[in-house]
Image 1 (cartoon, rainbow over the protein chains, first blue to last red):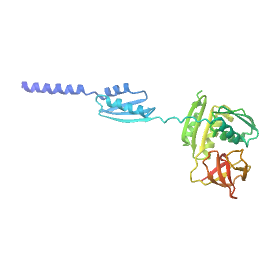
Image 2 (cartoon, rainbow over the protein chains, first blue to last red):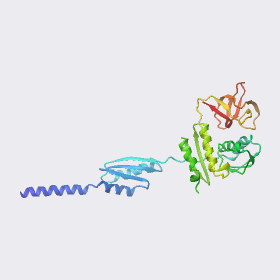
Image 3 (cartoon, rainbow over the protein chains, first blue to last red):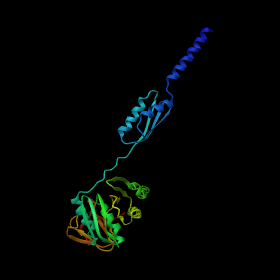
Image 4 (cartoon, one colour):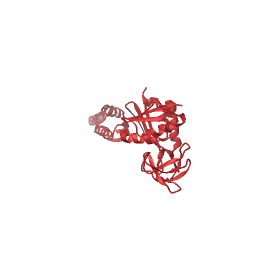
Length: 154
Length: 140
């Protein structure tokens, strides 16, 4: 009887020991979330971690996964983070090329005067409303920094 | 007001129209929208939206550079000048001598489109030279 009691208490003690040792999902979640960068959402189910959200680059995505894997009690990490598409840099034409291209584009608009300086196209003179969109479309394809439209629309 | 907000209707329209490689960035007080439209009507629609937000394009705070995608297999283009003939020139530039003309509405053969602004064409009469690409509409 005494032995049985002892054994039973040992079993209970052992169980408590292991349960106490094994971090709960919520604790794991909180611990990882605290270490991850803003914008990353951490979810934990039975030790399986899922990362979601958007990060700036691949390196950040890999690092987020490492952080999660290093946490005690984590069995696996599903990395569903997406990388923000990099912004395509704005291309602005050099003045010599732009001057030539603007001259070509405005040739058929004799009432329009165009000047180019530091990538900015300055338009003066007058234009018919119907022709304005066409002219603007032509000029916008030339990679100007800006189109300063001072045209009088008739 | 931030430019992205001012032109939100335009960027929304571009997204809805399925503009390929759509890029929207603000730099030094100008919003740059680049991309490729599936056809000319889509491009024109975006310009109408732009014109509604900024009547007559007087603000100078947007560069809308949306080109029309052209299938590599396309071999012919229609002359879409307002009414006049289209000059065909010896080289790519209005400083180049005129070697021929294509009539308004005429469909001509595309020889080379490696230059975005000036396409090398051949008329039905066999005249070959460069035309301003904005006055040509690729024929599907």
